[in-house]
Length: 147
Ligand code: CMP
Image (tube, rainbow, N blue to C red; front, side, top):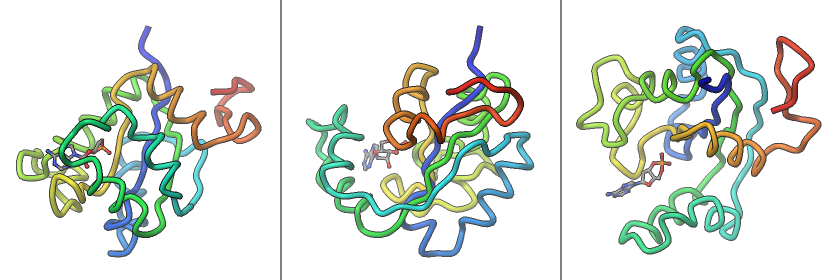
C-alpha cells in the first residue's frame, strides 16, 4: 500500500525570493496537509549527511554550498499516495523540463536552485522526516499515528 506522507524542503533560493507563502499555497491547493514544518539553516555537515547519496556527483560541492547558503523550510506533508502525488505536483528536477503549473515550473531558477525537494520513495520519506523532525514533532494531523 502506498504511504500517506512525504517530506519536502523549500530551498534557499525560494526562501530568499519570498516564495514560501506561494509554494505552501500550491501544496494546500494540491490537497496536501502540512503535518510538521519549521525554518532552519543547515550546517555543512547536516547537508553533507542529507545528500550523502550524491557524494560522488560532480554537482555535490555546489549543492552543499547552495543548501547551506540561507534558511530553508522543512515539512512533512500528508495525503494518500503522498510521495507520487507530490512528485507530480513539483514536476521534473530540471525546471526546463517541468510541466506547466508545477511548483518547479513556477518557482525554480535552475536544476540546482530548483525551489523544492521531494522524497523519491516511502522509505526515503520516513528517513528524511526522521532526519529533520524529532519523534514528538512527527505525527498525523488526523489520528494518533506517528510518522
Ligand atoms: P533534490 O530533489 O533536492 O535532490 C538532489 C538535488 O541535486 C536535486 O534536487 C537538484 O537540486 C540537484 N541536482 C541534481 N542533478 C543535478 C545536476 N545535474 N546539476 C546540478 N544539480 C543537480
